[in-house]
Length: 421
Image (cartoon, rainbow, N blue to C red; front, side):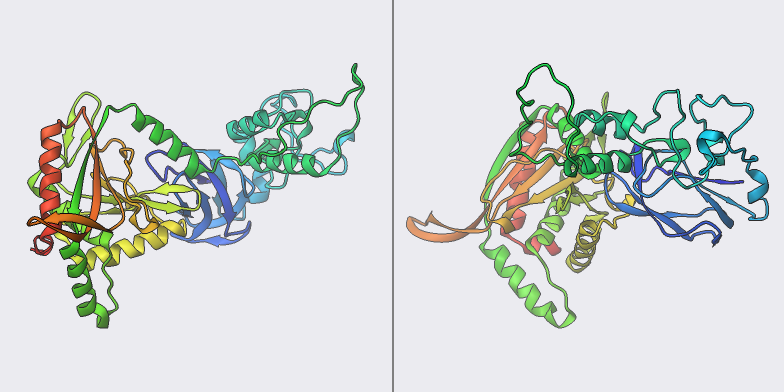
């Protein structure tokens, strides 16, 4: 019978969380049917069926963390489901809830893949007399909270303890008074800091931390330029007035995506990434836009941005941002960028430096548009300015090469007709 296994849904994914089953045992399955929702390090995505038949067994409960390639369910013909199960023999210790056993496997042995496929989807207890079987994530969470796994009942295949079991035990411990234990000292044990709330890392936050830590090992340097954005703001207002009837609205970020893409065409050295023992100079220009989501940061990608019109970029960027915040991006929509933009201007941030999105060579940090006094033709005037800061991986680019790119990007933004021609 074909197995449904945990697929690799992103280039950084090592395990996934079975967030929700959308099909039940006994359902007839067609190719392409969505069986479940999988939470990865980037988003929540659909698990599709590649086989037809009857969904005979669900091997993991909702909330379980499963490594890539781990079994999730079994799809068969339906008629052989009962025959595939080994006979059940009740024992005195399990007469109320008999568990399937195999005469060829000792009771205390760890559950194998075959045993997991033969186990029912309902919770079972861990093998008595042996070690406690847990997922790596469940062990880490239990260790961080000082939880004894021997006190936890597993609901995973073969009684395996999964993340949901540990989190439930931690929550129960917070609401249930601890049983008094004899202690040599009369004074109660000092409580852990009660003014701090422990928040477990989500998959997105954990991978964001890993990748940014990786980026921090790259030798960064930074270049800042101040753009006279008066013409850019006026250009945006004129375009939006003309496109109002079509319902299209151009943002400053859309203009920046197009401007960066156009400038990268003439500076291909910047459209590059670090390859360990080589530099990869990309032939196509894919611009990533950093988007803040509830659990961290994600970078949807606008592919071939230099070949798309402003209207196409605006529509695609809006759709990608909405799907990113809803956790509905597909893997192709958040990987493969060759240059990234991080715009915090809408939050009133004047200036900041961004950490490079590895393995890219550079990232552009964009501040807010501000009215500032400037000296123009010997007279004091006010201008709308935007501060741009380019973070560069010195292993890939030198200062002069990066400065030339930033200079030409500044010129493009100050003469915005260059953005559309």
